[in-house]
Amino acid sequence: MKYDVLKVQGSGNTFFLIEGKNDELNWSEIGKWLCDPAQYGGADGLLVVLPSVHADAKMRVINADESEASMCGNGLRCVARYVLNKLGKDQGIIETMKADLHVARQGELVEGIHAFAVEIAPVSFDLASLPMVYNAQHTLIDEQIADFSTELRYTAVSVPNPHLISIVPKAYIEDFKHQEQLAKRLNDENNYTPDGVNVSYVYPISSSEIFVRTYERGVGFTNACGTAMTASSLVASLLHIVDENMVTVYNPGGFVKCHVQQSGTETKLSLIGNATYIALYELNIDDENHLYIKEELTEQSEYLQKIKEVCIAF
Image 1 (cartoon, rainbow, N blue to C red):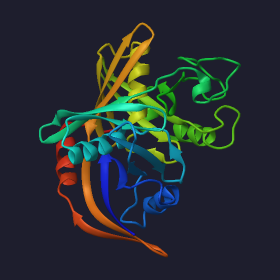
Image 2: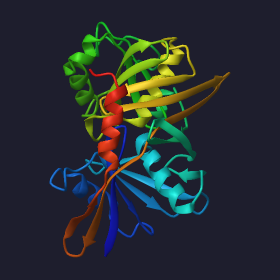
Image 3: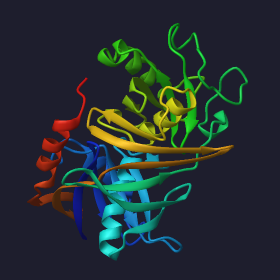
Image 4: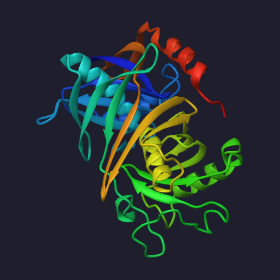
């Protein structure tokens, strides 16, 4: 069997993208193989675009360690571009593991870089939704857990991927050791997060800007995690770290914009950013897997140049 494969990125979060007819392959095994650095540098994950009986398409997200994520904001933007281009539409609905999400073209992120907006949902602060267990509590919002840190405070939220978020001084961004040690612990066998958790440290820049670095479950430190950036914007808004509905989120791979709308108990989140095509490959699957490059695309170098002009370095 032969498949066209795109290498794509959203905010520097890299993926291979394949359109399948259904679950005709073991996508977890294929994803792990593709994400290996031996395959043209590998990637953070595999995006599988499949038919949907009630939406424009279905997205599956396979992490580099072969596990499957319930959602991926950066990946969803790349799938949105692929599906909308294929259908000739400006907006649509993509089925994900836990929700059908609205996606749309959104002008330009910066001049020359087309943007896509994707809905991030469902949102829950219930610890059972992560899941996370702590002190028989139902929520964890801006609390100190001495076992994690005697200085930092943490908030837990699922969107629907599980996230543990802390607003931190700049020193914790400059030195990643504390975050790495905690994240590795919480993604190994532990008493708090039986299925692991994404751990993000957030540094406030202004009333409408934050910097986020994320240790992603199943990946490790990544250039960006879309659901983490959105969840971090929500937490920053909830804790009055930012006071604007549109939050600019910088990360090691670039930046996005997150729209946070809260009305009573209802929360609506939208992630806006790039969906860049890096290269086109052909995947041949017989007794063994073979990946061949067909074309290097120019979008990546253009993206890097544009982002370099506007991003904040840490």
